[in-house]
Length: 437
Ligand SMILES: [Zn+2]
Image (cartoon, rainbow, N blue to C red; front, side, top):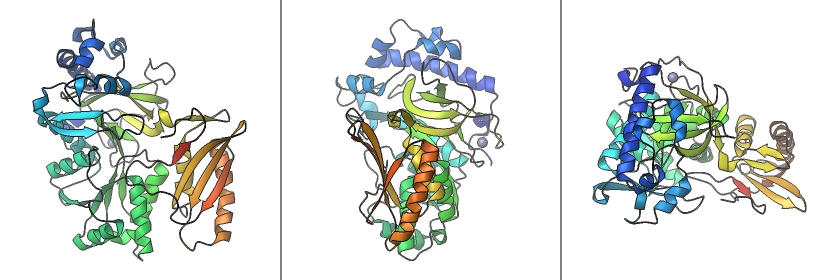
């Protein structure tokens, strides 16, 4: 079968809009009735006021900061964000808190099942099927990462092998021992496993992985292709978050991502005014309303994810809207020497043209009145200083072309830069007022 839910994945556009608007109205009424946050926030707005997508603009966005504020109330720790009775909550998740106090996210059994169903769409769309034995090289934690993937894979009939509690070498041995043929991991950790396998004298392509779903970090297409080359497998991306859930995923065409409709109502809004929907091919901010999750109602959640709106229809036959690309997080965009800079561009340059670089970090500092951008790089052991110096010169040129900034490229000894399992932090802004996470 081509689709996980053939009916829902091939609806005509008008049907999606109609269903989503009707779910939205229901969710709005539910939120006003059950969550203190929305009782206060949406005073004077009723479900019936929302008759078209344009009417959505009457409703204010929900920002992460508000969630934090309302969580200071009772009942602990969810406070006024809770949409169900506290005794109905069966699962605790939280955000990583890299931008401040974590947000605690309650799921009832019902809302958790709703999240998993949305994830089934993502996994099935990425070609995961019952014959896959999926290795999860990851330690489950308080974060949402891979919990949904785990349960969704089970629901699809795949076989799950939890790979927590092992180091990277141990995980590589386990993949070979049990003949796993699929993985779910962060792009960074996928690269790290490949690096470690090579150091052990094992070609990553011989691990037998045929399909990989990535999560946790924005993945430039150069990184996705790099993983495909290393493992000789198909690599898919998706986007989501702890609060809004996973709301878009890549199909077999690997051209952009499908919104998971009608589970979510996603608006892609002009980033200056946050008012109007952008055109196809333009960059906008994703504003997401999960339409069936009641334990933690969210109305027009500002994800601060910058995405490029995609084109329809898709060759796979699905009729949902698409995003062409994830540009990155608004919080990561910086003005450096008057130039707008996104760290994702550096990753794109490195993964595309410099596979020798195994780890890197970008540091912005203020020297006197000038901003300085330093790129710390790491090469494999015994790489050879002369070869590294040549690469350094070429890298400086490529970065200049792509970012319009001159980088100071430094070569660090092997093993100096940190390695990441989840949410790599390769960008540090040390300037006064710069947000250093
Ligand atoms: Zn498609």
